[in-house]
Length: 344
Ligand SMILES: NC(=O)c1ccc[n+]([C@@H]2O[C@H](COP(=O)([O-])OP(=O)(O)OC[C@H]3O[C@@H](n4cnc5c(N)ncnc54)[C@H](OP(=O)(O)O)[C@@H]3O)[C@@H](O)[C@H]2O)c1
Image 1 (cartoon, rainbow, N blue to C red):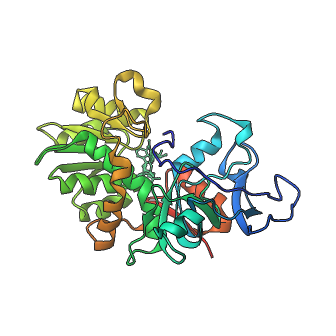
Image 2: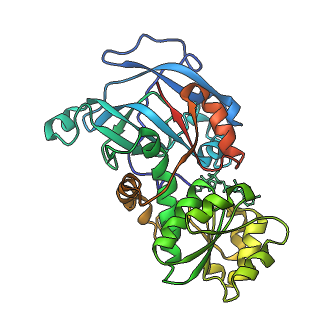
Image 3: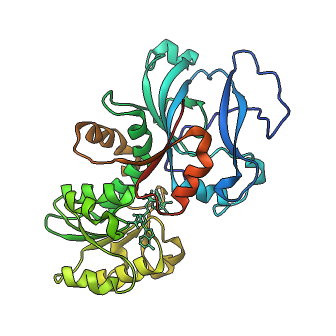
């Protein structure tokens, strides 16, 4: 995943932190903030909460006081250096998505009235969300439905957009069977619900402790691990039309290829080391199947969550100060759903 799907607005956190620079007096109009940042590439334990300052918003920006921040596997991967180790990007403030309240608006926004102080919004960008306030361009900013909590809204858009793209790329027709690897995870659970809404039958891999929860959603769960291919074949004698992989390990890819047959019907958001097999990667690049769905689906996903059409419980919340612990849990692949940082 590149993050260029996340939306066009640039991260505009401008801070001087205790970790990266001597405490400068905050510039005029700046506000004191906290950010969880890493001074070098490595594991989530590199994250430290530091104080900094955030400048007043530019003309086309708003300042958002953060209430909740979605924690994503992408944050840990970016921090690990697997996407590259650009030393000039250090210190690194990870985080793709947040929900909060507008506390200041730039001159242009004040003039056009598109957003005002007090509006509750959701923002997704390419990094920088692990902070108690951020400046954001209003392009791609979403209004938080009033009946959603900040935690729900902050956790939904990145995984929801990814799930929507997976399902749109596979385009299941009524009655077709879809195999989802990692159906109990944040992306998998949403993809399963979206595929079922399209009329698909969904077989989902998950550990046994999540099977009952998946059945309640209409998913037919199977345990992953030794013998997975046979277990899937046993319940799909008529075959599987497509596999949606959110796990990315050899088992998920090999079982998908064996059962689906056509690699162009195996879509992965995590198995990038196996692209030599011809499977289809989805990581936010614009030339990929249903690429536009990632961002375009977000308002509808927020509405569907607010009306109860989508089920998306938060698996765990952590106080902002425990960003490192939260990201460690997500990186383990054992969170069992969405993890969110709560501010304040
Ligand atoms: N390419 C993209 O655009 C994109 C976007 C979002 C996320 N991602 C990536 O997609 C992956 C999933 O994200 P997520 O937010 O859904 O993660 P998550 O909520 O942590 O879910 C992880 C899932 O993996 C399952 N799992 C763990 N070990 C497994 C194994 N050995 N075999 C099969 N399943 C296993 C877990 O199942 P149990 O808990 O039931 O064991 C769980 O369902 C992450 O790697 C993330 O970085 C990519």
